[in-house]
Length: 107
Length: 120
Image 1 (cartoon, rainbow over the protein chains, first blue to last red):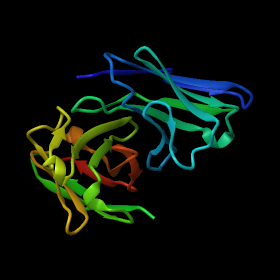
Image 2 (cartoon, rainbow over the protein chains, first blue to last red):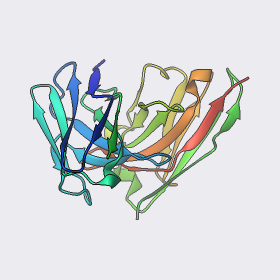
Image 3 (cartoon, each protein chain N blue to C red):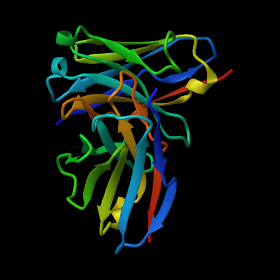
Image 4 (tube, chains in turn purple, green):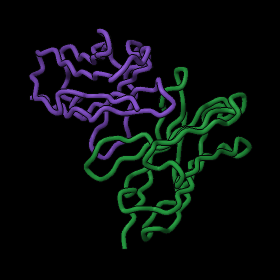
């Protein structure tokens, strides 16, 4: 099975920072990678698909990239409303795998 | 607007069975792969199962943790997807989310979830 190692597990950032969350795949996944945001008590929301494509309605401050088998989600000049837990998901193999999640707190 | 409404959750004892359902609307259901994702209390997301469309022979795939115990199915005539859960274990306790494939197959739309609690 493909493992997705997500880091950091949590971070606290200011509104002026650039926030970066990474997921490293245990093998190549051909950019079958998506990112989700989940707020407390709510269902997850798709942010990024195909590693770099922005889902409809998602603010342009969110972006995705890849370097080798490491995928990154970047939030430029985050807003307070961006607080929550972020997950990556690989959908390359027949069985899919989420990363462990990153709890983002904005101060 | 896309709507996914899960139902059928509840409290069951270990080794019992439960079938949860998801009613879909607002999109062409027969063209969409469907998925179940769960989240144990205070834990992260876990992909559970997926079912493809008729042109893909309704192929199904399962997480190792549920393989042989859970069965995903769909009824395109009713725009429904189901998850039959047999031989339930306490570790199956979770919120179960129904999601629909979008943007070429990614879980783009999500239901509000249904809680399944397995406890004696």
